[in-house]
Length: 404
Image (cartoon, rainbow, N blue to C red; front, side, top):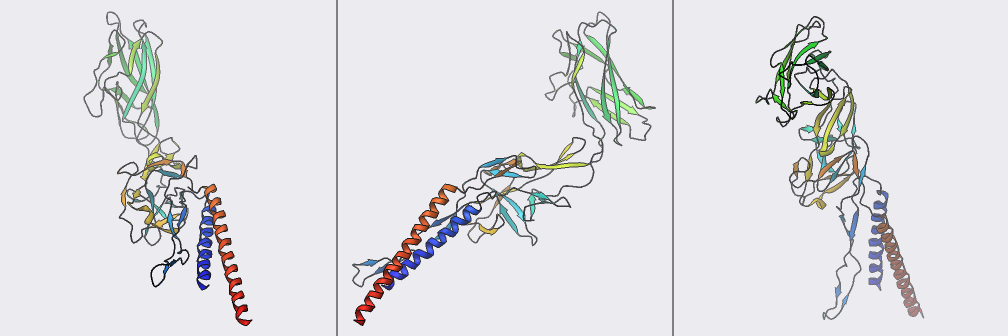
């Protein structure tokens, strides 16, 4: 009879634990990166009779828990400072005492000093240590290279001119307009144009140091100058000296070819002379306007002049046995006694998953499964109480027999 009591009590304990686990899973249904806990049940050691012919079960052993590492659904458009890992791996964070923890929760934030933090306040680790966004303004960058995509009218009469302005930046961050003027050459050089440069920088001297003449093939493609063999390639150099604001003299390399160094950016086809695109690498001084996390785990600072700068990249750690990590709360894990050494690197390398910026990994809790588990655990608990009630009644009946 006593065995019935102990067996039933083990049932109550095991199913009570199951209800606790299911309740915790349901509570974290919306927790980013949460991994559901599962229970593993096993029977308690059986009691064997002296002659070995009979075994009597002793109930259920206390269940053990394990983590379901199945990947949660991707939740896009979750905010600029969010990131999700698709595949294996964990983000790395460092607490106030220097301990490294691991998490799948990519919901990050910035503090007043520009440190990238987890929601619980730990510093997020990047390739070069804790990630910090510099608060200083972006210094101006002088223009040193430019390109212009344009077409010159093949049917233009000799002496026809076409002017194309391009805005450049000096070393102090001031902008100047450089105007390139193309002039159609007289016959018989029907496929030839000359060019020169002027600037609106008062008092400055503008000269075209190299080049000055363009020739085209019969199909309208650029013939000369030929692609430059230099690094970076330069077909013509525009020099601006004596800037009145005291900025450094400017030397701007002008390349006539695309990145493949074979396709000319300037053509001569039938049609109106016009520019379709232009590029220059200078930028004015700027202030920080926003921070975001992009694909690959790059932390990108955006400035009010439109320029973007990568200020860090998230590290990703993988483990041979991630289920052995110890849950320390706040959606974070610590290395356990049986955990393998982490393999650390950037996303998409060495078997690590990819990082998707602006997204979060949802919880992998399945609400239908958890509700089903609750029903099973409830029924199991009720069955255990029924056994206790029955055993108690039998005990009482036995006592009454002795009294009679």
